[in-house]
Length: 376
Image (cartoon, rainbow, N blue to C red; front, top):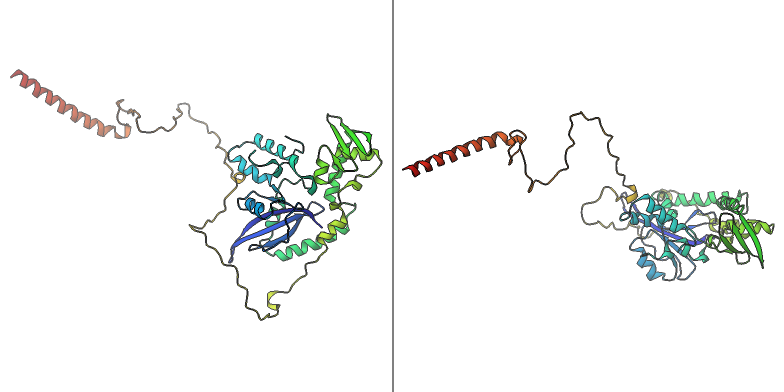
């Protein structure tokens, strides 16, 4: 019942039995997250066959890319733009470049080491009705699955079943809000019928677009990507006196939504009430100790590292002299501020002055002896 979009991610588990939880999360008909599978160890089979029916969204980890290419070579693989930006900003920082990257990712018709079909809407496949740029569906699910996973999923399924029965429109609240926003965009468009439910739509602020209501496509590709009519398409739909909701893809309808949340997760009693099975007890997985000293803090992403601002300037006395930058002591001529001679500083001036006096006295004695020898 959920859309053919799957997000992959993992998170660390701390406690008496540390490890990693792997999650596979989908997207329902209301743009919400739908947990498909989770496990502390590797899942043997998710019953996902190789083909063109699924989209995987990952955080571009090194192990996921070759694994998907090997096991599922023909599925669509997209990457989270937020994780791409974290890798991008390590070498190219700045807010301006960040906005340029996000603008390129959000663009649906915009002309790179990473193939654009993995992260830019302009190259996404339109068969999957997926325009997601972030892997937040896994990140938000991981933040809550560390404890009481079964209860969380059980309540999620029950609450969303009840919420679907209270929907006031033929689509979910989030989808209805998107349609209302696109209706405002439609007020700035002028549709012209070409024939066979095909329209040429002129935008008031510039741009010509081709809308085909039979094929449910628009040359801006927004309708093709997500299955929700864009503003250009809604202007043509209004000219036919029809409702834009009738042109929304079936994956957003309540019947499809209830297929996802129809099955119920049954409650179970506490462990002390479980019946004895007679089989050997199940032991926790073996904990693999990593080499080296254990880390007490997790590695922060570049976006989480906050550089403290410089301290505010304090008023300086009028006779204050700004110190020079620190220089290497090698090949640097040091001059004493006390006696004005070179080779020492003020802290060692007394010692150097006494040594120089002794050296000068010895030189004077040698000169006297030399002159005396010359006279004789």
